[in-house]
Amino acid sequence: MKILFVCTGNTCRSPMAEAILRQKKPDWEVKSAGLYASPGAPASRGTTVVLNEKGIPHNHAAAQVTEELLKWADLVMTMTSSHKQLIDVHFPQFRDKVRPLKEADGDVVDPFGGSDAEYRKTFEELEYYISRWLERESEK
Image 1 (spheres, rainbow, N blue to C red):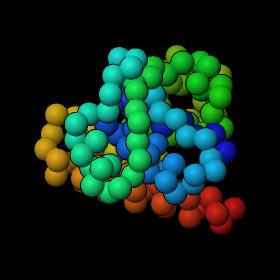
Image 2: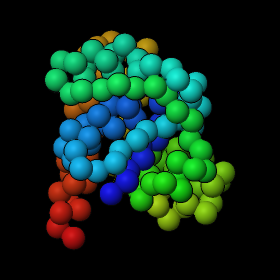
Image 3: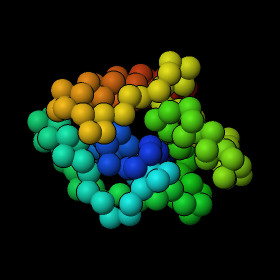
């Protein structure tokens, strides 16, 4: 299984989601990218702090969403419904494999520029929705 997580800058939410899923499913291929990423940028300080606290390995360099990455992925999970809409507009050929991680439950809150506590809250939210998605997948 090849999963691509997408957020805005690929320094907070999607790198955390990537690290969480890599830990839960080490045999899967997992990547992340941003719609407005600065390629090569490191994960944000808050993301690094939280992943280190949780003992989750990470080595992140931001990547831009590209047609090649979208083609590579079996499933693309966005952090917000607007991220999905942007991908649908710019890459309509991939519409069927793109969906928000939280589906109908709203958007994953962006902790960018926030406190470590805000990053921890986002981590917990991501872990919950990824675990919930994995449970549904295992029932199929």
